[in-house]
Image 1 (cartoon, rainbow, N blue to C red):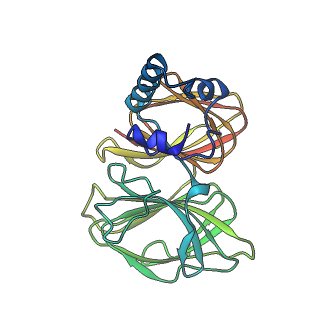
Image 2: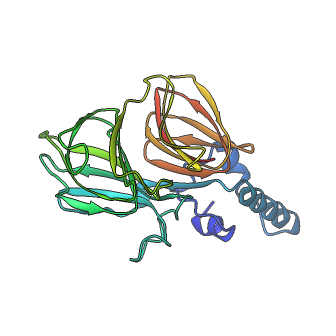
Length: 274
């Protein structure tokens, strides 16, 4: 199925040569001819895909940008929140989630001290370490697998994130419009459970929730409701309304719900609308 065909159905699915479709789905997605029967089947299939609203973005299709000692692929930017032009390949905002990027520091690099106002920032450290400096939580060393959360609290904060090692340091970062706009800025480090689901930000009152899923081989999980799912590491499958895709590192999926199955140890970053 070509990208043009998918976009004609109103979807923003991104993939290369149909590689993300299972063989069964891929075979059924190819029109056999131009007869009325085949056109009807093709139109019905497009309608079904549109109804399940399963959007897929492969980060390898996104251009690399960055600043200071950081390089990144920005996968989601809210077009109403950011004043500058947002690349077409990015997903738009997902409720209060206005930004998501896969970034990496050069050895010994840093962002430099800079200020944020009006956003809560959630950062997952997939491996290595990150040294945090700033107006809140200064001096914290965030270890591999942990999540750093900086809350605006109606006050804003300045921070400098530093790679203290001589290796490239990855970082996954989400920005949220805060539900709490009082109480002052604050800092937190969350250590996700190694074999389950951990809430790292938000909850019912915020209307949105960020979670880290560390799942063993052969695990299965149903994720209800609107969900944003990024594959940090591992392999598996994700399904919605009878359609199934292969999970691989660097995929970002937006769906109305997901059935997940891990074929190896799997780490996912989830954002769910509640």
